[in-house]
Image (cartoon, rainbow, N blue to C red; front, side):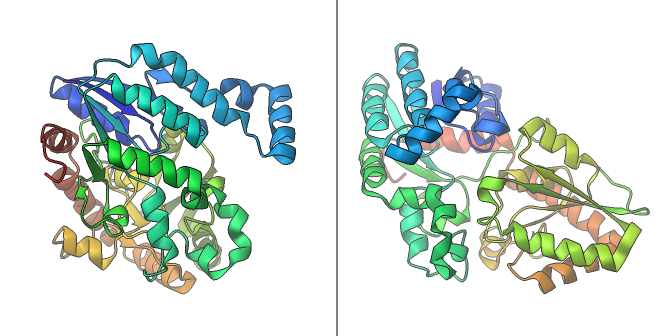
Length: 380
């Protein structure tokens, strides 16, 4: 099969591509590479003029302040338009999000109409925020979610503008167009399965051939890593981790080493946490995101989403990750237990790797995608 993957936010599409290529399929990725993360793509629509040219950056900021115009969005769409003649005759086109082109919704809709017409089958992957996810989270039915800080304090609205845009009419119209144009919608983990229970869940693919399990020495200092993405700082609950780490520093001194990194490209990020025993990911999740899964594959103990819904779904009886909660005292208690019982770090790390190999192995997951793509029924 010839497969076109549109968009890349987490390395999910790159790992899926590796799995599909191992199964002898031809795969192309088009996207921005997700700005500073710099994920590999075959066709780049990164808005280099309005993100790298200082004069154009200033002009764009001025236009946005006065007219609410963002020329980065226009540049992404224009770059995609120039690639359209090459994006033909694919058996499957999969969007990583209804807004996968990341342009103005009316422009994205125009481009997607062209794209869909010149290819055979279209699929939507929900692996992040999108209209039905935000709609559900705004109902505040869950004990917590990535919108919890906003729901508790509406003055944070500007910090959640990228999330809340999906509730606006133009993005809602784009989602509805995509939804009626695709043959199937797939969700990547329980954070999206819970709002969309009728959709097929296919776990994130992790390339377990590339990611090597690392047995770490726990007889010396325990190394804790926290990666900070300023754009999702509040949504991930990073402040809870930071407050917990301040207490851990005072409590354990030189028994621990804390590594903090901010807004790093993907390759630098994964290298920097290589020596860590513990990785702090996010507190408002029910399942693991991509960074957490890759760290688990390396044998790290990851503080992330690992709620009872996750344990039940995978029929787990022992922890493969630490369920992080928006509670500083709880986080301090869990970190303290691991620091004082380093043998548990090794045990959880081994279980984490085994879990990834069983549930997220990339060629197995790629075959699950193929099974859905090859099915003619919408709900198969």
